[in-house]
Length: 225
Image 1 (cartoon, rainbow, N blue to C red):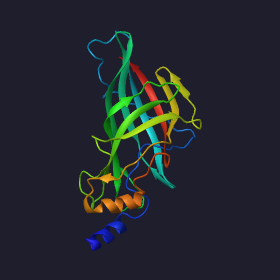
Image 2: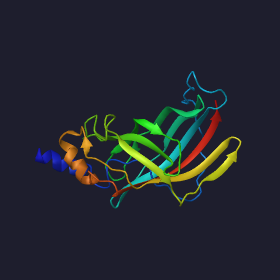
Image 3: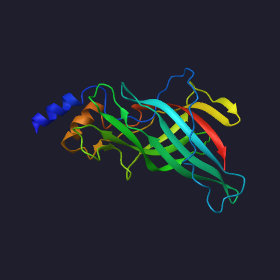
Image 4: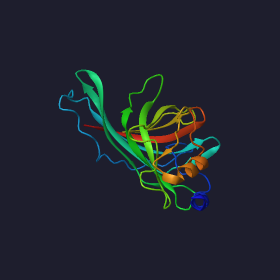
């Protein structure tokens, strides 16, 4: 077992094995192509003419303590409108290809939808989303995660003053904005077998709320339904 842990530590050395959507440069970024194929249909009792689909394309990094972990692209879709004169939402899909983690000899992670979302913005926050992160590496078993579907990571994002809301286009309506979550809590890894302690040590897990920062730059395009 000791030999296995030593080998694992060498193979997984460097930054980390996990991240969540986060930091992106405040510099101008190209407008991505949007995909509305995963837009969910409005419910049968939806108020006609009130529903639209929103397609998100985001980039960012997660900071755990003093460590930054960069991610690739995350895509998300949902539909919103009114039912009986009241706001309603239907979640569509979260897509995220496994993102390679630098200096970890092939380690990567993939974000998964955790079963809850609320994208109705208010004065307190931009939105909320439950996630969990699947960790991938030749030495890690399948099912190694940070958070789980039953106990997901709960992210509450607020507007990031460094990336204010920008209207890119009115037709189709396209906007860009930044969000930040400085209160995200990260638990120990789950389902990682004997290498769980190695992963936790490399990542600094568990990491309580207030020790982590998740920043994200997002482009959103709207499509009437």
